[in-house]
Length: 62
Image 1 (spheres, rainbow, N blue to C red):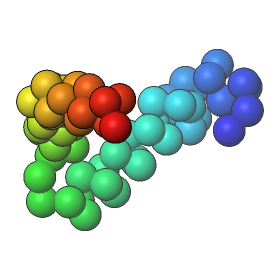
Image 2: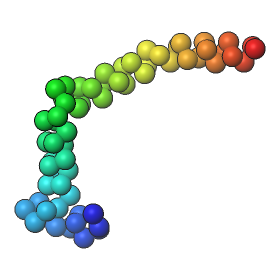
Image 3: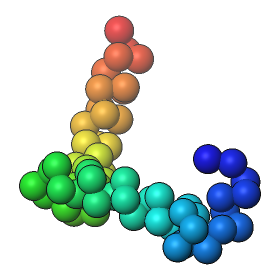
Image 4: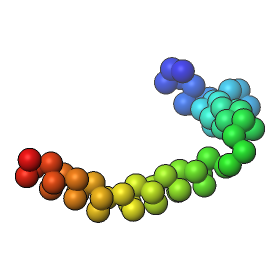
């Protein structure tokens, strides 16, 4: 995609149309909506931060 695509209206194949087509293909393939899975990944990462800091502290002692 080049910079001229950003200036095209959606009906002519601009960025919004291309993104929507890719998102629809992904959403049709995965049973869980992408936004929900991203939110779940973020919450899992937040819950792992204390564990990772403990591992880092333990590794620095060795």
